[in-house]
Image 1: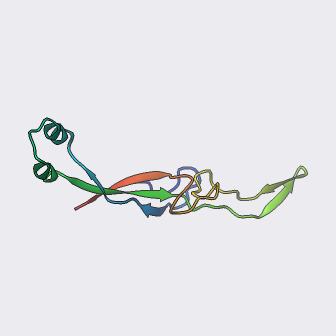
Image 2: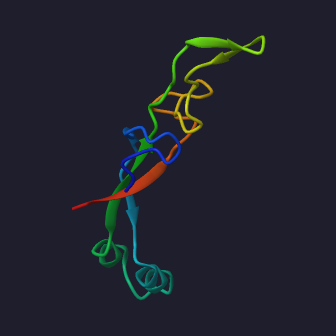
Length: 104
């Protein structure tokens, strides 16, 4: 799991977690598809997890400098900033990392 943005080195924040997801071992799904397992038996092997988005919070600032007659931001937003095109924490534009969290 990354702790810092690989571009600007800002400490990453957590985005909104996904809904709970259910997965099954592939071999058990094959047995179920072949009719060797009932749905109740298959559910005994269910694995529950959710995903967490890790986001860069570096939105820069609006301070500018005039250099060679061109106005430039002193500290522009990081290219990984989750809201670079108007995104939100719930619906980010850029996700730095997605981690899978097992639910016991």
